[in-house]
Length: 403
Image (cartoon, rainbow, N blue to C red):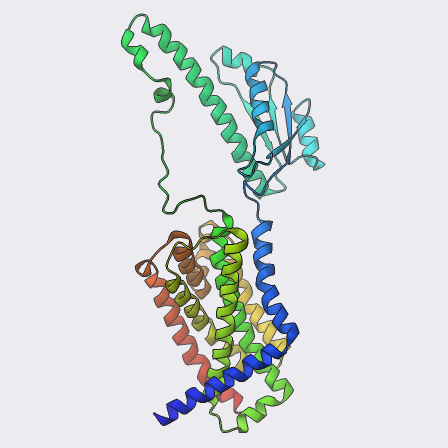
């Protein structure tokens, strides 16, 4: 019992020493705060959404003179985001080829072509066509733009259909009065969908990405911090002083792990506060469960950091090894893009990455308001991964550092 208490006391002293060294380095302290702010702002504003896109240059070539095509053009011109900004800046062109040339020169990001027989086809009860010409050089904007244009065209088409069916019902009602009670909308759209949200409001893309960034920042802080801390001690020669001090090797490892745990938790909470204050992210789940998940993320990645710190003798090699581990985890864990959109073989790879389970669990709690029963699988996986990595890393560190 006395030995255990001594290890704990020495570990706390080692952690305090590392945290004091960190606090004295003003430049490192500044970047400790700036890095999560930069990550949050960068990811919060670079990805397009229907609300972030505004004043998109859109070309319209309307060769029809009917009222329906004029109305559709006006609808596109007047479309606004929920913030009241115009979605499109409409430019007029003569034909489809002119729109395509304008897209090639990047004057516009998409176009709509309405043929000269558009109104005539509708009047003759035939199917009219509106051509959407997307800018395929930018798939993300093209997808959002195409969806918006399809919604406008679909809404216009439904309105025309209801008018025509209503006229048919009126003519038929003269012979059969019961037909006059039929609502044209029930014929055009007999099945209607409703959305039953788990949480109130309309979550944006950043609501999805914020939990993943929290997990990513924690991972980078713990893994990089541990590796750099040990390699810096070696380069400065202070590690030799620690080794000859009356402190056990286990206390050195635990002390450095505790200091990185504190830094990782602080950065994780900084990211969360920024997400709430700047981007309006709302935590729908239990805060205690979220904090436990953050701590488990620190625990899971700690073993990798200790292992790299034992192998790498210099800061440069430690950083190189860290990037080798962090880069695939960053993009294959579902932090920025849903795993379901990845190729099947990459989905298999993502299942062996601990960051996947950390990000998924945080997203369940923060976005969906899930409880402990919904994240127990991720908790178990993170615990197992952390225990296995520590079981490998700690003996390796003690053996290598004593040489």
